[in-house]
Length: 343
Image (cartoon, rainbow, N blue to C red; front, side):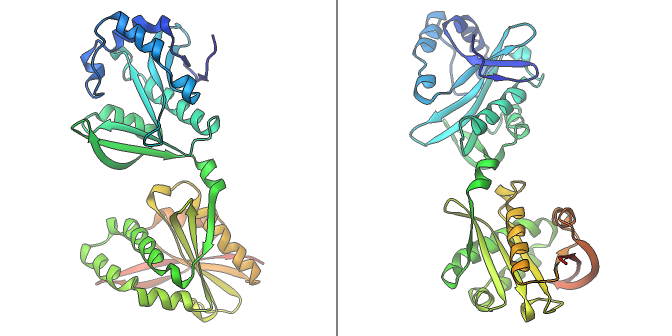
């Protein structure tokens, strides 16, 4: 028998008519189907007919797969991918006998199926759906790497959609585009959104509102773009703007203003793309510009409470050389000044 996916403890294969008894019994347990919107099969013959007519393997080359225990060869449940032609989406789903819950089988098989979808099927995105009250399934989705995307109507119940993107695929398709004056509204949108997502958890509503109102006006951003010593780039995934970069040289730099230096003033990435190397791609572009301009070193200021960013720059060879106190609303805050020598 051909197994499609193998993990440390599990084997996944196509469902077949011989699984009818297990399939029938799985859906008999009201706890198992409580949050699925499905009902139990009327009898064993209905389960057989379902399996006989299950056409996803022929249509898509994948589907829901039987999950088999390696050591016992027992049928534990099912897990796999399902493509919705109308929505053009592929989701991850799983269902296990109740006596196999809380053993990590759902997470282990879901991770393996997602990896198969990305590595073998070259899928760009996999989603997961669950009722809001189904906390166990939501935990599995989160452990498998999916992130909350939005709420939706799950058959009259409150539901949530989670998603995960193919990092390798996405990195290959990320395009950098220099920002021009005609892109000003798109720049304003991504600048405001990423700034708010980054700093709103740590600052008062009043201070955030003041900065959001003053820091990203069309006039201010237009003047920055038109400054010959500033360069902006968008990071694009398809047609979606997922981050941006701003670098300065000469008198456009905010602090040092040295002729032999380049400042990375901003690298911001949409929160849905954190951890997916987008920031690294933008940083690499900044370094490329610095070398083209024959800069001796690159420097930047990063808020001391932005630990994610501090670690990112340390990983890329930056060292602290000073601190800068700045006013944010009615508070004094501190930037760590960091630099990286290029020569």
